[in-house]
Amino acid sequence: MGLSAVLAVSIFLATYVAIGMEKINRTIVSMSGAILLLLVGVLSLKEAVTTYVHWETVGLLFGMFTIIAVLSEAGFFTYMALVVAKKLDYNPLRIFVVFPLVTAFLAAFMDSITVMLFFATLTYELSRLLRFDAIPVVVAEVCLANIGGASTLVGDPPNVILGLMLGFSFNDFVIHNGPTAVVASLGAIGVAYLQSRKRLMLGGTVDREALLAMDPAKAIKDAWLFKLGLGAFLVAIVFLVTHAWVERTLHIPLTAPLAPLIPAFFILILGGTKTEDILRKIDYDVLLFFIGLFVVVGGLEKTGVIKALADFIANVFRHQDLALVSTLMWFSAVSSAIVDNVPFALSMAYVIKNIAGQVGVPALSIMVWAVSLGTDIGGNGTPIGASANVVAYAAMEKHGHRIGWPRWMWLAIPQTLVALLICNLGLALKLWLRFY
Amino acid sequence: MRILFCVDGSEGADQALARGVAWLRNAGIQAVVLHVIPEVDERLRHYERLHEAELSEIERLFGHGGHGLEVAIQARERLKQLGLEADRKVREGDPAAEILAEIRDGRYDLVVLASDGAGGVEEPRLGSVAEQVLRQAPASVLVVRAGARR
Image (cartoon, rainbow over all chains, first blue to last red; front, side, top):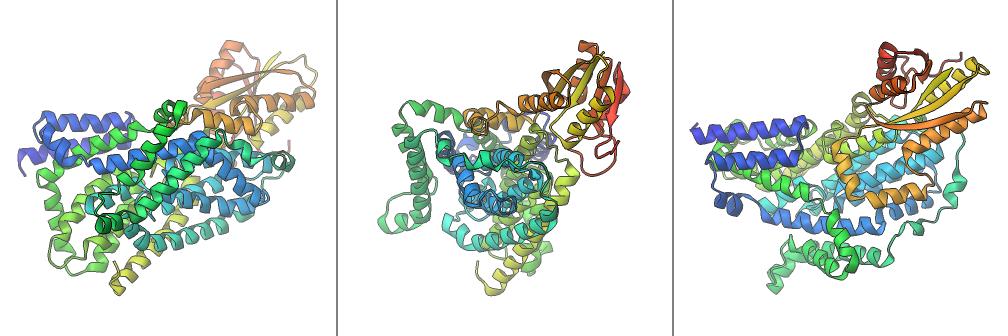
């Protein structure tokens, strides 16, 4: 291993460990790692910016964040939760089953952190009036949000990275990961229900009157913005579904990142006085975090470290497709429960791309589905496995419900294991049917 | 006699109020209810800042002015029902450190709190906050066992 490779590996590991320790803001860590890599000369600034920072991923995330910021500003999430709770007649057991399914659905198309920030808060508020234990509900919501996120290209940042870097479309994810994620979601909520249904109610006086008097429509802060946000969101989804066809047939370069960017800029133009507020809500920290990581992982790719790792994996698993695919999924799942899943997915994108070029290994697509399912779902296992977990855990703590690691793991691990087993079976079935 | 009641919205804290009052009624008490809002993860703070107005809207819809204040207000009402007038205080930070700081600042004679609080599962152990307060408080501490009948 040359000096450049040693430096690239050292900076990557230091960045990875510092992100995991959470003592310093992770955006500062990733940008520091990137700057250090440039300073020691592993990459030039031009190389970093033009070759390794994947601007399509940054653009797609910016577009989605803008649309979600508008929906949040308009009161969409509160409205959605209150409408669903009302339809369920404020029945805690029904809320326990349906709210996580709603978070799974929303997180398939939106940033799961924002979805969980609102749903954890609203679940706590409903639990206070309806006297049920909010903790199993919130843990199930997080688990299902992460499983739901696996089903589309835009559902979870690892999917955006894997999909855009390796050339898989929104429809590819829906067709291949979608059915698996739906079955895994049903399996996980089934486990959650069996675990906690008997211990859900806390006793005490239920204040249903206050809820019955509440009009969900009052949650909409700005009707114009609400319609604009929802319209933009639907346009983005339509563009994501049709962009490959439009590019191929109509020869219009409507790439995946442009699908949310076009409606996003439309609403920024039409947002009037609200545009400033919307721009302030966009999570620029995450975008910078990604840019720094692209450079740090780019150092590993340039120096041949990833190629060496890929060669090693390909040699161990040559002509053992199911073993390789299953190992990729479980390794991704365990790693994501322990360390941040974004740098992991980014490294794995390069690793499986390098594996796919070799003889006697499965197609790149099935490896993408394996890494994506493992990375997205494995994070459920611990309170720090994914950003949505961290936010929901801390939101509950703030409201006086400290979940604690043991209780989180006791609730989340069985749901996660069942979901991952379903995914593993799904991947085996795909290999058998040669449908990937 | 000045007494500090530490609450966090849990069943245990509610029981601590009831037991504390039952034992100490009519003893010339000057009571204060304290709720410490725990320090939250920086990532939650970040997202709360991004969606601050919408989260405040949820609190408004559900008819309260923030969880910390709500817990302290409810606890004060509970004490009133039990026959004891009290002031309320809300602090933010590490619960044990803030309770200890309040005990020192307010020169309390007695502190009442639950053995394990909102995070407590159904296991009969001393919570970390109760343990730290018990060890370090410069005042007498009445730790009421959650779920205890007396």
